[in-house]
Image (cartoon, rainbow, N blue to C red; front, side, top):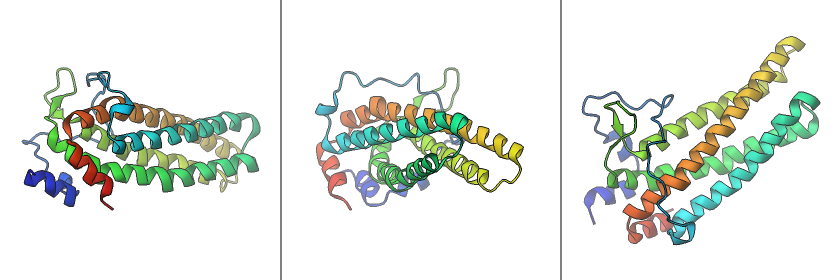
Length: 218
């Protein structure tokens, strides 16, 4: 096995300290390159993929369901306010995000992304822009944005309950709803990118024995 691949399996931090930028500006987590020039899944079905990738996609399906519930709660708030039922559902969504989805993201960052980044060449992702990066770097930037936006939404809702002035509370609540909708849109786009692009590239470029190692690693 390529020593670099083995090192990536054993030490996922390698991707953070061993990136070459050739003097170019690093990818900003607040402005990831456009996804629209990336390739599609090229007809690869979920059933054809390694079970490791299938499980990641199954975890996406669970999050899609949770996002739909969260979206429904956001739509109720302008008419009903923060009722006990709404508050419970908000708490449950953020508990799920913190415990389940964060585990999912860490799994991708620790196991899949380091190996895939070594397998993929850098590609132009901005028309007319000289900056080149891999789809993995785009996904890593997405992960940072997702965490940042989740923190904003969570803190806005928390601030609402502590704000004594009704007008200020309403303004913060409107901001929480707006940011919540942006958060949902970002997560859905991110999962689409992974399902349709990144996992297909992983299926194409990563050997079965490497997937097997990722599946068995703790």
